[in-house]
Length: 244
Length: 244
Image (cartoon, rainbow over all chains, first blue to last red; front, top):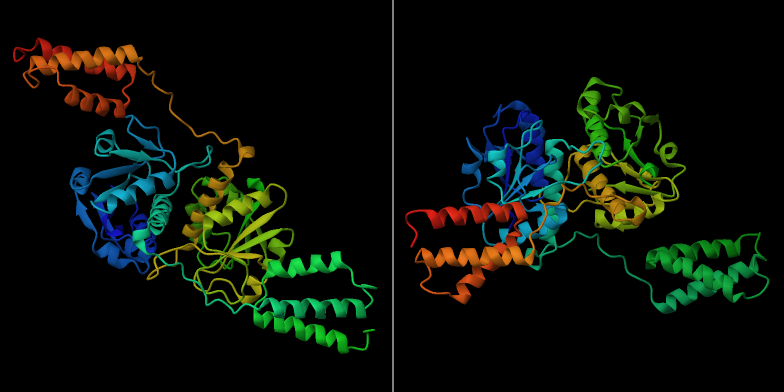
C-alpha cells in the first residue's frame, strides 16, 4: 500500500530540498522518489540533508518529463498553493486527499506531485494530474517550504494508512503499569481520611471533601507502585510529631 | 487563540533549524517563538531559512531555562520521539493534542516544546511539561527533523483552530462557475443521443448506454460554459462528412 505511493519532485532548484524531502518521506514509510529534471543532482547537500534516508535518494529515479514519472499511476495529485488555472477536482483538506490516495494505492501506483520552489507546476504539468490538493495555511503567509509540504502530506498519508485495518499498524506503547484493585484503592482512601482527620484538616469524616480528593486521585489513575508511594507518604505523615 | 500558542525550542544546535521552524510556524499562523539557550543565535543561517518569517525570528525571546519559557502557561506539551522516562499524560495523536491545545489557548498561554536535535529533552525539562506528544512515524526510521516536527504539529494546531467556530476561518475558493439548469442538461443529453445514433454507434435509442454516459457527465458537473463547449463539439460532429 505505502510502496505504491510515489513522491514526484519537479525541477527542484535546491538539492537540500531533495534531501530533506527524502528524509520526510522515509519517516512516513514512503520510499518511491522520482525527480523530474532536477537542477542539481546528485549533490552533497541532498545527501547531507537526507540524514539516514540516503537509500531513498540513491534509489530515486530521474526522468525528463512529468508524464514519464506518472504514466502508470491511477491517481496523480498535484500539490499547489497557487490558484488553479484548470478546474481539476480539488481537495481542500490534505486529510481527505490522503484517505482517497491510500484506497487507490492498495491496488495501483499513485503519485503526489510537487512543483518548483518558486513557480509551482506549469499548466502542462497540471494536465498530468487527476487532482489537486492545497495545504490550508495562513492567508498572509501561506507557502510552505517544499520539503515541509512533502512532510505534511506524507504525514497525512501515513495517518490515513495507519487507520486502515489492512495496515495492522500498532501504536508503540510502553508496558502498562499494573493497576491497583478496588480494595487497595479503598484502603488508600481510608488511610488518606485518617491522616486528614489526625492532622486537624477535617474535624470529622466529611463526605464531600473526601469524595473530591478521591476523584482527583482517580483521574491520576495511580499504578500499584504509585499507590505504594502515596501510602508510604501517608505513613510518614502519621508518624511525624505534627500529627494528632 | 493562535496568539496564545507558544513554540519553544530548547538548545537548538543548528541555527538553520531555528529559521526553518520560524517559517513553519508562520505558515500556520503562529508567531510566539521562545529559544532556550540556543547554541548559535542570531545567525545568518537562521535568517536565510526563515525566508519571509524574519519577523518571527526578530521577535523571538531568548531565555536560559525552560522554566522561564513556560512559567505562565497552563498547558505545556513536550514533543518527543523517544521513550518517556516519566509517565506524563501522553497524546498518541497530534490531532487530539491540537484539539485540546486550542481549547486552552482560547483563554491562557500554552506551549509546544521541542528538544535538542540529537538528545531531545532532559528529565528536568520533561518535568516542566504537563503532557507529551509523539508523531506516529515509520517504526524503522521515525525521527523527524526538528523543523519538520514543528511544521507537522503547527499544521495540526492550525487545523484544530480552523475547525473552531470562533476562528471564522474561510477556505479560499475560486469563484464558482455557473451551473446549467436541468432543461439545459436535457437538451445536451438529447443532442448527445442524436449524434450517437447518427454516427452509427447506436442503431436506435438505447436507454442503458445513454443513461451510463449521462451519469458520467453528471459526475463531471459541467458548468454552463463547459456544456456550451460540449454542445459546440457535438454540432461539429453532426456537420462533419462522416456523420449519417
